[in-house]
Amino acid sequence: MEIKESLAITGGSLIATPKNWKLQFAFPGPDQRYQYTFVNLEPNDIGALLVSYPVAFERYLRLKRELPPSTKANETVGSHLTIRVNDFADGVCLATYRSPVRTEVELDHHLGILRDAQLRGVKLMRAAADLSR
Image 1 (cartoon, helix red, strand yellow):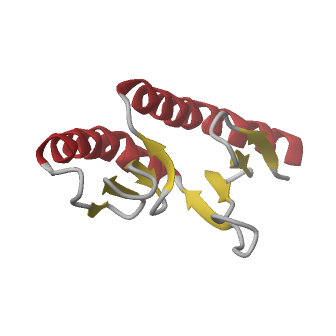
Image 2: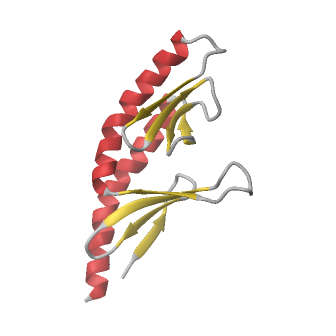
């Protein structure tokens, strides 16, 4: 038994089975020549993102202030985030260049979705277990 719910982040789903849950994102390529990129986040990944997103965002803001507009910068943060400055998809991105976070409001939105997914994932996992009986 699998339960799947859509998330407020485009292309995101919360997927639960009786024994586990995860977030899955399906990001389209830059144009139709490219296939979708799928990113799966397990519960431990989400905990790590809740810590690393704010740190990466502060680093992004500092680089944005300090670098001349003609200088590009790309830094990988953990296994799922990339800081991109003065480049395509400027911001703190999930999976190289997807869903860039450029403002405090966007950061709070992403963190809220991740926190909600932590709580909802456990509930859906229990529901999947009950439905499997």
